[in-house]
Length: 137
Image 1 (cartoon, helix red, strand yellow):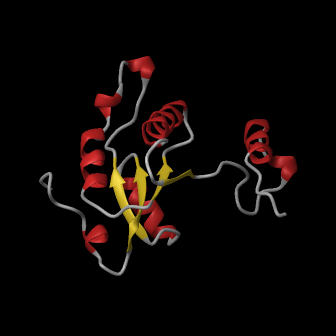
Image 2 (tube, one colour; image 1 turned 30 degrees about the vertical axis):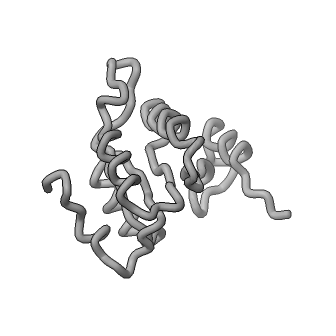
């Protein structure tokens, strides 16, 4: 790809061109497509922020993301970074940079796996499930 190329998925006019999912690596796009849970377009950061290894904003394609946002009609951005320290740092940095922009901004939720039984869930995952619970009313 050159800087101006977009992938076949994002070029598909049948996809919602106003919903952008930001992922860390190309394999993440493959996983989302296999799950058939996103009908919008993607942006691949090609890395992550990792302060412990001196990987700051220059470790991700932030300039290309800004250009993509400027040249599109994006209304919603979904941050789909990994739930690791580095993925959390990357999501935090992006959310801070985008918080005063006119986009609806969200991040994938954390919690229990589908079909998981509470007694077998580790304490950290269970705590995240409670913290990020969905309110029904």
